[in-house]
Image (cartoon, rainbow, N blue to C red):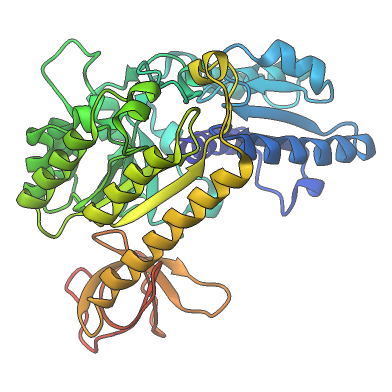
Length: 439
């Protein structure tokens, strides 16, 4: 979401005459876009703000803007007291405060500013809003496209509803138009985003859901691949699973967070499903799509989680052998139900032990799974070069990171790669002499 917001803002600023500086110390305007999903992310943002404070002392005319979930929908007054050197505070996906500030300061042409500001306010569809920033033109292959903003589910651990507001689905015409304009500029893969992406359309006054949207986006000429995240087990319908199976452009890789494997912990998290229900869902996905990859999220050390309850999570992962685990230690987040009503009673040492235990299991599973690809050929969408070793970098349909060497310009191409080395987190291969027709 933050990458999509940053892209949008960058395009608007370039329309006003800005261009990207080599570093923040060279910039007249610095925008810090923040994530606070976990305490570590917020701490990182605060550290960066202290660096910017020192920079502003040396260059007082520098404009500093703070954007994203750290600002949220209500936090600006408190943050202004804490960080008085910040000039502008911008809620997630809202560029208007910065555009207003620039206009009030008379920094750029008011007519241009008014036009851009009006587009942002009414969220109208204008081609200019979807122009890639200069540094991404002819280099970006994938793009993130938000389709659901905010969230109304309010899991007890999650800060997103308090910072990004209630759930709002974007009209399908806007989404299709945005993807079309991105494809016209060279984008070959889009990631459709939502905090609970499966709930797309539930707040629209029409019989239209994520599965329907996937069919419409797949009809866009020049688009190679479609992904979406993040799903919720309660909203992963058979209609959606079948759409993933039937639409060639939709990658057979699903992000379905389970968060925990114990029913009492799941109830305390207010997730709305059980261990058994999640297992049944994974079976449904795999029975329809045997080649599908299922990724998940896990939180260890949730308030009240005993070692026995943690082992239920461990057993779930050991049994299901999912294809990737995004792992986090629980941390209190302001305003959430868990912070207000539950005691963070699992020690940091125990959280780390549990994290390490699952990480070790995940590494074993991924190593075994990836080893099955040795000496096989996979189709890779080339995203760029690895600067350290000069190898091309891309991903398979199942989202497996793959590196290979080739002297040709293959950016944005679909390439067959023969795998000759497989680790737990990436693959290494070589290209065939004959490349696919998509080249």
